[in-house]
Length: 191
Image (cartoon, rainbow, N blue to C red):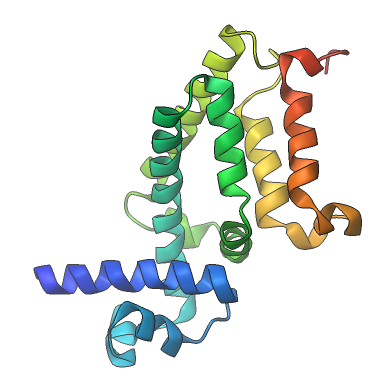
């Protein structure tokens, strides 16, 4: 692939992630092309339909999650602080809208993309290492694992429409309450 074609592809995917985070998965393809600085024809040559574009955005999203986790780890003092800051980052409204849209795609849309499984595994491995460190530091309950964090993120980012009304009205409050329950100091009864 030529260098200019690679740049166009990257701009389209980045623009799609931004526009879909702002306007939802049904954002007009024209708005995405405009944000990317390319013609609609270029967009459709790269991505013949919305499904293909969403799959590429999903791939981009998992890489962005890994980069955010690495960046936050470099900015925080403890593993627990990194976990809490990452969960808050992932649950920000624009990202939650995007995650919700991506959750509607069938699993094959991602697994068929080259490199997606490896990127997702790298992210999960980094998160797992943080959980292990937070537990060794005595900050996180020993009976909570990576899967618990992933499920928590899934509920608050991928399926916000399924939250009860009071939780949906102030998701950050309830997310913090749930995170507090994962702290070692919050463990009053074994799971």
